[in-house]
Length: 263
Image (cartoon, rainbow, N blue to C red; front, side, top):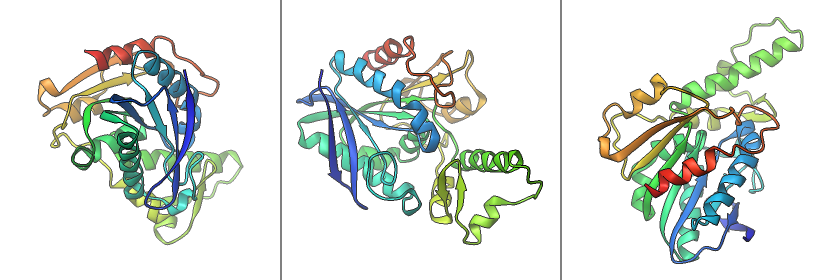
């Protein structure tokens, strides 16, 4: 099995793609990864899944958003609209390599991107179906969680100062959160992302609630008005690998994800 790296041109600069398997006429998977530290913690599991997909006839491309991973740029110069262009550029590149149908696979923040930009992505790419792993459902809740991490780290350093970090960012400050620079340009673009139940999936979505025995209320709210034929909602009690260091493989996850794509 081949694993290759490619730099391609996107709207703000070159982004990096990791391709597992040989792209040929037919189906290819495009992974929209997590963001920030979740991206780093998930890399090994995503790579193992990509290898599993490729071994079963689904060559897989994992992209790095502009300003993240091995792509060019700094994250404080990026925003969600630029990352959408990265997804489209990656899909167009897959078409140029011969892929005729694309399966979108969104992990955590990548799932939110997939859900929020449903119509745009389907208008610009030949999408066959979709898979999401424990998608973030609201950008604002996600940024609130990030800023709570900042507050907790401040307390751990012994400071009792009460700081409204969101207000500081809105006033023009740049704030470091878990090693990543946040500014208003970046943060507000993430906060504007949502997976509302009013937007019907444009193609079938296999939704996997990982690390859970039951469907969460957030997931139920999103799918509440979806056509039953357009989604499959499953649970799988995996480790929370996007939060847990040193989780490098989740063997039960790989065949389960493949089965959803093959159904």
